[in-house]
Length: 311
Image (tube, rainbow, N blue to C red; front, side):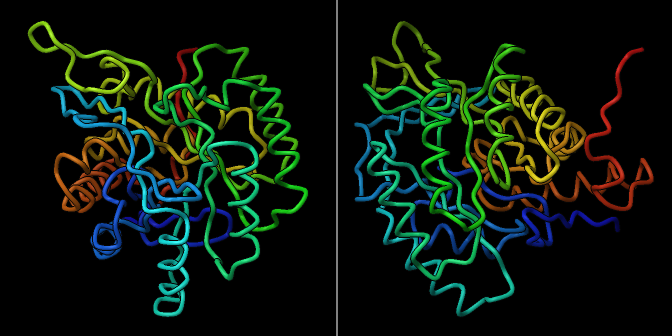
């Protein structure tokens, strides 16, 4: 069979598929399930400095073509995930995992990242600049001035491999402006995309989630075209050292194939994982391998970023 092995920031992974932060990663039990599946690695639930209960329920709803959620960053707190990962490093030193983080303020962000920098964590850190579901808090990555300032401050002290989770951008000039900022820094990856913020889903005459009067992040099949556009736009614009993780609308092996074709080095599964459980990784991997066999591809490099255009 062809290989779905990949690398991010010099770390190797047996498979290019993993979970998306926020799905099947809240507890150690869930993370262990992803670790034991066909996935190449996992990312933890995006951690804040202290544990958070998140928004009131119902705050997540599966819908026919995807999902809507306004979770509000429920998580067990940084120490819970960091301690688990440090323990895992001792038990499985040949595997690499992702730690996802977010600050509720710039001060929080620096406190969290200083703690990770000073710890023995040897994996990959993802700073979430795109949480769309905290009432009263805008998405940092839509404020280019703030994004540049935070990254400048972070890279003054943070020397471990760091990437950022991004919201979707919708304008070509925004791709240009964002990439010009990211290219200034030693980022190792960008993750495109988080959910499309502030969608609304209605059943009968009522919204389906409680927070924000039903407004929430849209995921699943709805978002794949937007996710692919963001993956490819940044693949075209970012310096080669900044790799792309593709997230959004991965239901089948064909969807994963398209993310890689657009330039992704790794592909995350969110809504489908929530709906199917960890067996989804084996199914999607098998479907991806079948496509690669049919096209004569031996590895991901044979087609990564090689999207065709109409001349």
